[in-house]
Length: 171
Length: 139
Image (cartoon, rainbow over all chains, first blue to last red; front, side):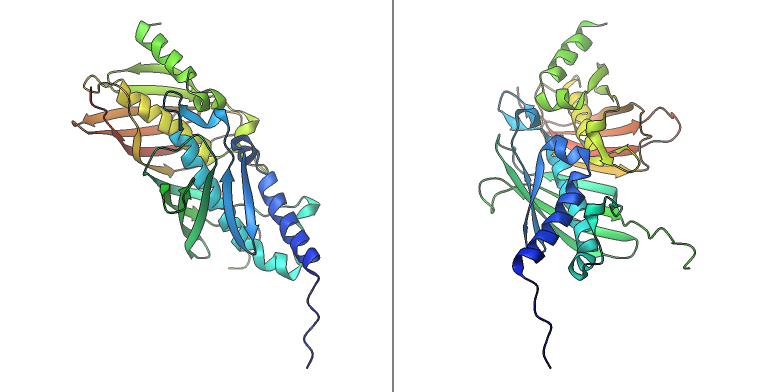
């Protein structure tokens, strides 16, 4: 029994990157903060590229706590949204380049823990989905700068998952 | 306009991220602060509806809580956020200015406790609430 021939790597990468770009570029606020995403397979690392406008305390200088909180929230939402559409990207059922984007999860609450002050340089973050149900999800996010072991902020948040547009009829 | 408000306004404008968000300090004193953030397309989180991103609201609430701590009579000066919890009740109405009011309700030697609420132009339904703890820097 022959398995189907795997797709060429360029085709797979192109499809995944196009989907990720479409998801991220649709949100103006992500561009405002200068956040980009690195992808390895389905794993995402968010990067908040350093810019002077992210500074909160110009004397130290240190990143604004609010910018850090926003960075963690963006990382959580995109990672959740990405995990939701991943199966459809793989099957080819979803084509995000046509402009029809899936709705992103909505934040219910976020609790941010500031462990050390953010240095004036790039910051990185990864989100771990602790649980993702039909309606609610719980996500934990870690952010670091030069050393992955030295976490400078972390957050736990709850999110409301986007409901299918036909919800209610199907009940 | 009081001298304290003028000074505090200049202080907020010296914070690059606060300036980037377009934050305007409208009231400050005795552990209370009010900050307004006019609607801007750069802050949109949901492109379909034009609703601003929760992160922008978080950044504004963090700034406002910090300002409230610094204006408290028994707080000597600078502060940094230790922890901040934010609950989102609803989306802010697109096109409307959002306003946060923060109250620093208790200060110890090392820690200041703050709560805040964010409204849009509907005065009856809050957009978000927050509670946080902040450092108190020694004199």
